[in-house]
Amino acid sequence: MQFDILTLFPEFFETPLKTSLVGKGLERSLFSVRLCNIRDFAYNKHHQVDDRAYGGGAGMVMSPEPIVTALEAIPSHGKRRRIYFSPQGEPLRQERLSSYLQYDQLVLLCGRYEGVDQRVIDHFIDEEISIGDYVLSGGEVAALVFLEALVRLIPGLLGKEESLSQESFTSFNPKEPSLLLEYPQYTRPEEFRGHRVPEVLLSGDHSKIERWRQERAMEKTKKRRPDLLR
Ligand code: ADE
Figure 1 (cartoon, helix red, strand yellow):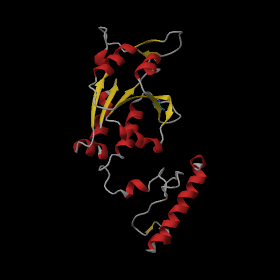
Figure 2 (cartoon, helix red, strand yellow):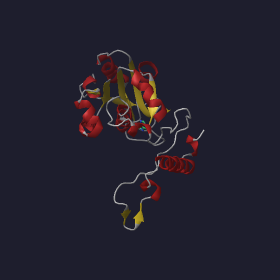
Figure 3 (tube, rainbow, N blue to C red):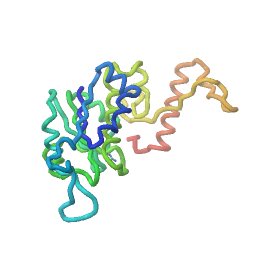
Figure 4 (tube, rainbow, N blue to C red):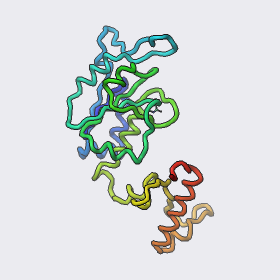
């Protein structure tokens, strides 16, 4: 899978792309990332990429010309989807993430200021995504969230299949689509500052442990995210 990230701050991605699972996946060529600085496509001599909003109002809007020129300069790789990140987008959900694995190329457009000219979104973007109901200063963090959440699903990236199948937002039972938050995890020592690991986890009784985990997952989901239980 090829990712192309269009941004005014390519340096923002340097460390995250070298770190942990994303870094490992890039090293092993399980996917690749190209960074494109939108400012390189600014046509005026001041390399201006934004302008005042028609109709007035505070803040600047990203001009369509540099963005669309940058989008058009990106080489195509098979089946492509162009995504713009903004708080107005469709909320990003775990259950939809794997559907992006069908694409050969994902173009991620990061906005800044008051966002991009609507004509870019209407005519040159396939989908607008939000990572949550809060406003960030730009789409870079959102693009990184999307990239990191997606590449974990690329076959061969995670070690054990297990670590994918039983984490938060993945159903215990594949036939039962409700998504649950993950059960609590413990590691050594058995007792830490007077607090013991739940006895059942030391019992060695796997079916009992599985039942306990499902109950805890259900309990936590009911309390914190009842919206996940359809
Ligand atoms: N850009 C600014 N805020 C955002 C959000 N919540 N999600 C995606 N992109 C954004």
